[in-house]
Length: 194
Image 1 (tube, rainbow, N blue to C red):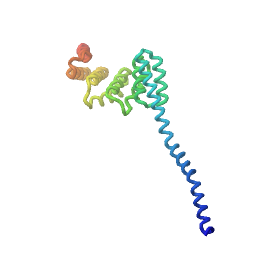
Image 2 (image 1 turned 135 degrees about the vertical axis):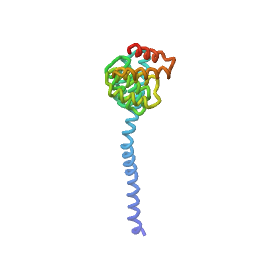
Image 3 (image 1 turned 45 degrees about the horizontal axis):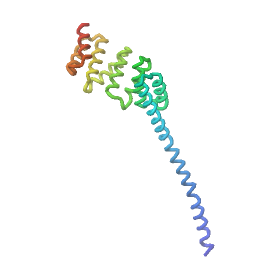
Image 4 (image 1 turned 180 degrees about the vertical axis):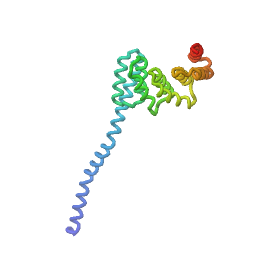
């Protein structure tokens, strides 16, 4: 009987010894698959923390330190909405040339808001990039346009030489927000110029 069960028992022992190696191999494989997403998650969290710190610096008026933190956050997570938006707002506030490309990236973000699109359109108008501004403003006008979108459309129309359209958009803006002094001033400015 011992001869009959001997080889089976040896096979069972070999199989029993293999399980720790198989399990270790599976753990290494799972670790390799999960490492990249975890690494990106950690980088995104660090970028978010740097953006929060930069926002505090902006509130304190320490714009140089805020810029350093936003640069570090963007190097960790180049497409993070919070760091892109904060850096774009800071660059706009400081009148830096990188504001326009940053707003472009913010506007392309899936988390971009209507205000972000409006800010980007305003930057395009300031830069004289009328064909891009037209596309962004048209998209804003297709939705339920805000007073700011109507004022941007008015500014765009005036800059391309269509004063009738500029007056029309300014009037729509004042109807939408009769108490908005900016809209009333824009309408008065256009009417005085024409």
